[in-house]
Amino acid sequence: MFHKILIANRAEIALRIIRAARELGIETVAVHSTADANSLHVKFADESLCIGPPPSKESYLNIPAILSAAEVSGADAIHPGYGFLSENAEFAEMVQHSGLGWIGPRPEMIRMMGNKVRAKEAMKEAGLPQLPGSEGVVRDERELGRLAEKVGFPVILKAAAGGGGRGMKIVREREQLVQMYRTASAEALAAFGNGDMYVERYVEHPRHIEIQIVADEHGDIVHFGERECSVQRRHQKMLEESPSPALNEKLRERMGRVAVEAMKKIRYNNVGTIEFLLDERGDFFFMEMNTRIQVEHPVTESVTGIDLLKEQIRLAAGEELGRTQKSIALRGHAIELRINAEDPVTFAPSPGLITAYHAPGGLGVRVDSVAYEQYRVLPFYDSMVAKMIVTADSRPAAIMRARRALREYVVEGIKTNIPFHKRLLQFEPFVQGRYDTRTVERLLAEAPPPAG
Amino acid sequence: MDVEKLRAILAALEGTEVTRLDWTNGQERLTLRMGHPPAPVTALHAATAAQSAPLALPTPPQVTPVSPAAAAPAAVPAARDNTFTVNSPFVGTFYRAASPDNPAFAEVGQVVKKGQVLCIVEAMKLMNEIEAEQPGRLVEALIQNGSPVEYGEPLFRFEPV
Image 1: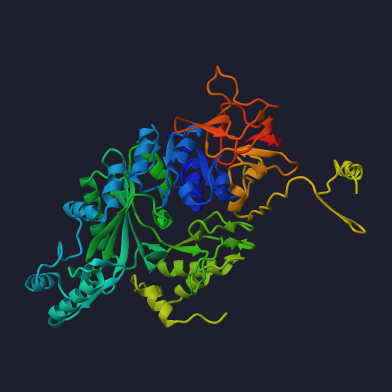
Image 2: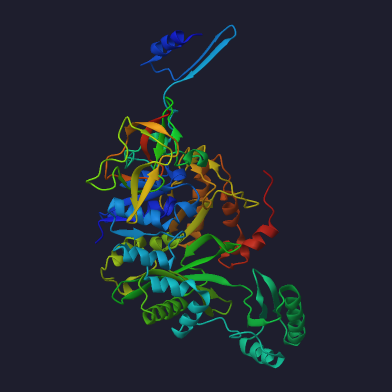
């Protein structure tokens, strides 16, 4: 087992790692920028080292400074948390070449999944279902017709040179296909200088379902069930829950089984998350894989009763998994709300000094945060102030508990998205569990927030 | 006001808890600020601070500035007098000499020129020579030879010459 872990991260995830390490009897070294000197992750670690000025590039992304800090502090492993250097294969390699333990998947896994095209190819080969569509660009109208029939309507036409939602057309009727293809291709040619198009199945109500993978260094792999992360705004997750209201036992078993089989084929190690798109028919497709611990890992911890960070650390140290798939059961229901320093209506960041702070408590309420009264939310880093996780026997009880806990949450001096969450927890599609990745859009369009 | 009078006032304030004095006499106005600026109050929330955490490193409060403007690692004027410090530009191991057999680059009392090597901070097996950015007389070496240093940690105290 490791003796001293250096945490190459900040704020709540750094504190989360400190807590896990301490319960394992491992010492911790916090690194921080000058701006983070008063952060709780610095105060609660056994040791701390200032590694640079506020900009991430010069501190939390500063590889020489972090490796140097590991050296002078005598750490024997590095935990990268999420974000920053957590999915940087070169950094993982340098850590390993320095003779330090890397608490994460092997660099080659990070590299494979970091390249979206390679990841899709590898996962297709490993047996994960892919969103049906053209393998490459559509060659002609005859091929287009054949592909569209195979994929099934509606389909989406995407400009090969487009991106970020531009150059896309949804075709719902077979009769419109050729005409819309010609228009889209001409538009793409005019806009991007390239008229090449892809065709893909269009999912009207996509849900974001991800499977938590836990693997040891010896080839033993299990999954810890799913998390639903469909509550998103501009691809930013706002709320996650487990289990997903969209899955039944059979679908859960199937998604978990194919995920674990694929991971065994590529000999995945440590923790990771496979993201799937789930359509209205219950078909699911591989989207991408995150080769790190996720922000939303606490919902899985709440329903499995297993500390994922401790699991990640002990597995990285070479310990055996020692769990069977059968022993992993989801009990009750957990919901995580990300509390961000942002305007609840415009979503503009709202950094600044927290002048009053009271975190909710009581049965089934967990708050992972480094916030306190007089803590300053800094403009240099992301705006997440806290994660509030509620756990209860059932989904309705968890929603009631989340509403109750939000009423106790006091954050003054900065704006937060707590009012948004209060609205969301009353929004009928969410309450019914019938929502998808476009539900937030609909909520914001339908129900203007009350004045004040 | 003459120097003697100022000295007398300073002597009277020495050892007291006074941190600021505003004094007016006809046309004469005097403002004195004593000691370090007060450390930021970190009132921890009861739920998160059941025990108060030990600060891991013996870091003086002035090396943990919160504003980016104050975070410059180079020469920083000391709060109390006209001396200034030379701070570490990165995290690493501090050495006062090129090797254990060599004399220190700079001794206390010595006057250094701009650009003169003061010490070495080793990071990633690289020996980085730290140079004086302005001339001065070395008043105090603040770090033990061979100790780890943080980004921005004061290494030496100088007075201008």
